[in-house]
Image 1 (tube, chains in turn orange, purple):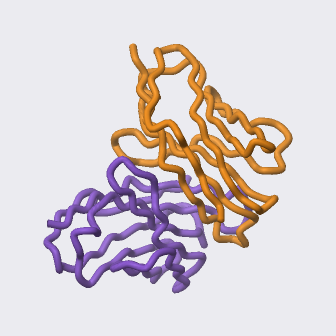
Image 2: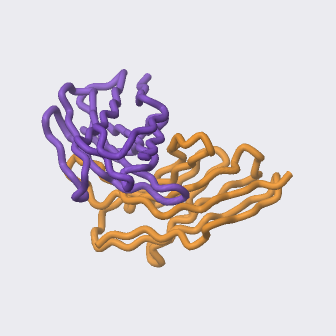
Amino acid sequence: AQKITQTQPGMFVQEKEAVTLDCTYDTSDPSYGLFWYKQPSSGEMIFLIYQGSYDQQNATEGRYSLNFQKARKSANLVISASQLGDSAMYFCAMREGPSGNTGKLIFGQGTTLQVKP
Amino acid sequence: SQTIHQWPATLVQPVGSPLSLECTVEGTSNPNLYWYRQAAGRGLQLLFYSVGIGQISSEVPQNLSASRPQDRQFILSSKKLLLSDSGFYLCAWSVSYHGPYEQYFGPGTRLTVT
């Protein structure tokens, strides 16, 4: 069965430094997608970045990059030049297979990131 | 552009009362729709998803039901609320015709059952 594991309940980072949030996954399907979402204190989930299992290069979106290590089944989120507004909860999620057209996701338990001034 | 609306934003209901949460999407057609629940400080649990009008799939047995009476409307209901139904409810949508099927979420409803 597919599973997402985020082992860091909480992380601190100094403003302007880079931080890595860990995510490991388990699936037997060769086709899958990995997502990262940000949840500020307001509660809304914000889509950050996506990596497909067949993508040859690591995904990047502005200050966000995804360190995809397929053999290790890890998909860590790297945030460069942290800003105070990056303080939030971050969730890793996985879509297994082409999923027909359901697009169902399973989520990890999340990591709370606090950026210190 | 697409937008997703949820209401109400907060709700306090007594045990045994009915529930109706509504979600609507604008700017797209035939979306996949999803209802999630999030306990405080925890991850999201998928409750229901729908790939079309009248098509509802339930992920976990529970006290809740969902309906999709129109293409871009998704409703979460309960006939009698339990204390354990308290939580943060999020509606989301994704395109249905091609990957990566990233989901976009509404602002959520905080439900407290007393």
